Image (cartoon, rainbow, N blue to C red):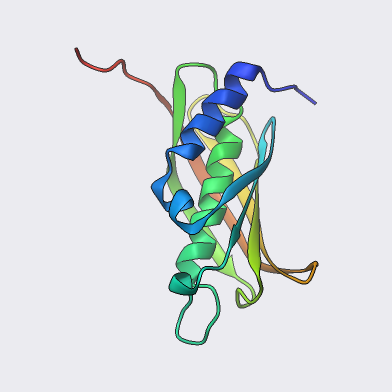
Length: 147
């Protein structure tokens, strides 16, 4: 397995820290390796739908973010990624204390990076797979800031 450089780790973690949505919901990046990323978050009361389950938007946001940072972990310095498209299959309600999203790179391409993510709801240490995401990230060169 390819080790992540300290520069890559810092780039990914700094980018994650700048994600307002992830900060708002109390999400944490709990694992990062070459081509993989895990993010965990509580299910806040203000992110529940009318039946009391975590809203699908929360599930989608965590899965998309985990897949995106998995892709960013394989990018060279000077590049970011953007989601080009991503599909979600909701398999079960987001019922539990927290959500765990694990993103993975399926193939490292020059122009397209296919990714997937699984999202689990966790309650008392028991996990239930609640969603599978499949998508494509696009590498984007970072443009220097105008002076």
